[in-house]
Image: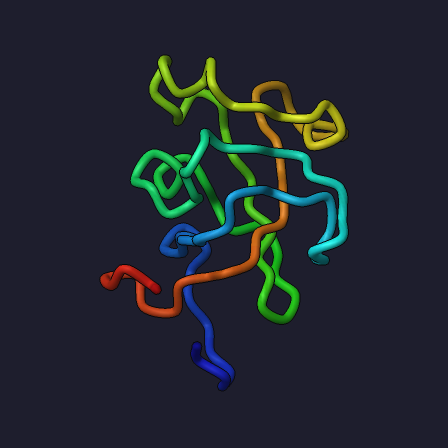
Length: 109
C-alpha cells in the first residue's frame, strides 16, 4: 500500500477488502456488526459500489454503506447489527474492515 502523503477527492475512493466480516472498531477482536454470505468477502462488485470510505486507521478502513446501493436480492441477505446503524441517517450503516486490497485490479491474494 502507498505509505506517503497525498490528497484525492473522497468521491473517487473505493474500498476493496477480502474480509468476511465488518467490525465495530478497527480490531480483529471487535464485535462483528456485518456478516456477508458464506464464502463471500467485501471485494465483490456490489459491496464496492455500495461503500464509501469514511475513515481509516492503519491497515483498517471504515466504510459506510447505503442500503439502496445494493441490489434488492442482496439487501435481504445482509446481516447488519443495529449498532452499525446508530447515529446515521436511515438506510445507512458503517463497519470497519481489514485485509484491504492495495491494487484493486488484482485478486488481492
